[in-house]
Image: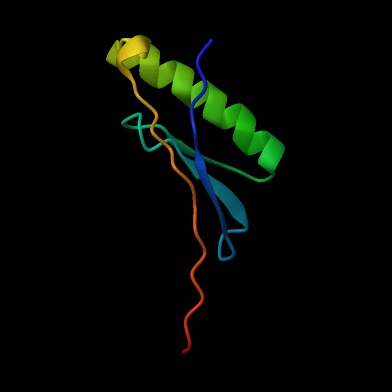
Length: 73
């Protein structure tokens, strides 16, 4: 088992959740719900690893965190 970190955003224009796995080239997808997005992300991660023949042990996920910065506008 290996855990991957995905960045998730909500697109108000399309009303879809967008997920990207930054440490895995090509791993991005959408979903109408968070649950659907999770399922789609799992599938796309498996497909990317399989099709690109990545050595899973060589994929390093150095996620640190997300910050929300407030500025005056």
